[in-house]
Length: 246
Image (cartoon, rainbow, N blue to C red):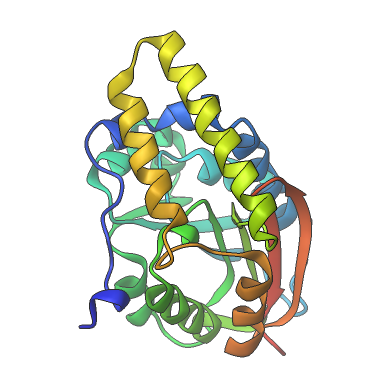
């Protein structure tokens, strides 16, 4: 497989074990997760549905999963993530939903899992802070598979890091982000986590990964999605959605 189309394991070691620090270094992240859940909660499929079958890409520690579970009681969620340390935390944080069989956690990379799913079998695909970690080629393949597995009229919603289209403005934003990392981790006396998050930010900003808003929406439209929309933006944190044409 072309390396650019392969899955990466970007969250392991201290970064995964203390992923809760994201809420400290990126306060808007919790709001984006909440908005993903609320958007799904307010969405009505354009066809009869007794319940919603939802695939979440990127369980993480279960922050967005919990928001999706709380948004409506008729949702059955299958959530996939390839980071073992994150899955362990998600299982601990989402015990009740797992016991009630409203949730199934799967330790696997997104593309491999999607490729084994039947056509038109899912009502909603939701994600938060995951797609921006993918290499461009891998991300494009994931979008193609999302479109395939969604039912006609089905929803794709993503809350994520979408780089500013203006390169100068995005650079200023990134510089301020790094300054904030230094302030937070210096105060906490955690140079180890500072190093890990700065290294991860370099990955986010690399040409192989960076996900700018307009090109990302264009990629979704070119893949075949309809009604690609931006609903909310706070700096690089944004909520977008699209549907599979009926």
